[in-house]
Length: 244
Ligand code: FPP
Image 1: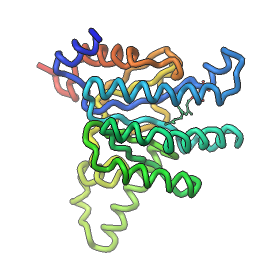
Image 2: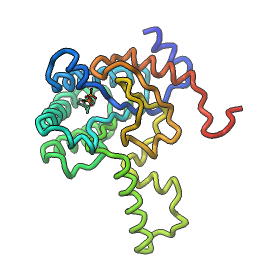
Image 3: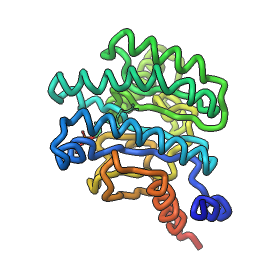
Image 4: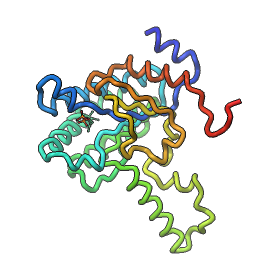
């Protein structure tokens, strides 16, 4: 594919892409279908996204699959989303493993069903040594509670004398976050035209380039990924400096 080749040749691919997959409900509503139909098509779009990242050679992809605020949804929809996740973890894992994808889950596992936690753990174990792409799935994830948990951990270490307050640096803080070991995202894509972060990777996105696309998530194809990366490549990243 022409655009994919030119993106690769340009040499400025994002190392880490994060995606807020939004618009499943609206996609279904437009078609007079139940919301779960939108989520099902959304899961297919995840497959397409992973393929696009592999095609380009992106090293890290992080997707927002279920936020800590999503528990506020009707229980039937939560059940449907959990079923989809189960199916995804059961059925896609062989293909992901084959494609050298390392699957990793961040977020609070304590409220997830035991069977889902077991599936997550076995997916992480099975794919743990894969190196082509790290796919991080944010599940029951919320950035503010992640930051508070990191602050609590550091406070406890200071309290017990393991750490001095002077040791609390940005690097030390980052090591206490769920994303420890991952580079910060270079590019964050949100679909469906909404333009906000919704409690996703707030600390990590300090200098991330944000690209908002009008496409509803179930319609997202790898071409949309390529277009977002094309836009990313036009941006000048200055990190607070002058860029000169
Ligand atoms: C937002 O659409 C999407 C979600 C809350 C969940 C994302 C889940 C998937 C894409 C499917 C399952 C994921 C995996 C990894 C198998 P919305 O329901 O908020 O849409 P709306 O804003 O149009 O109502």
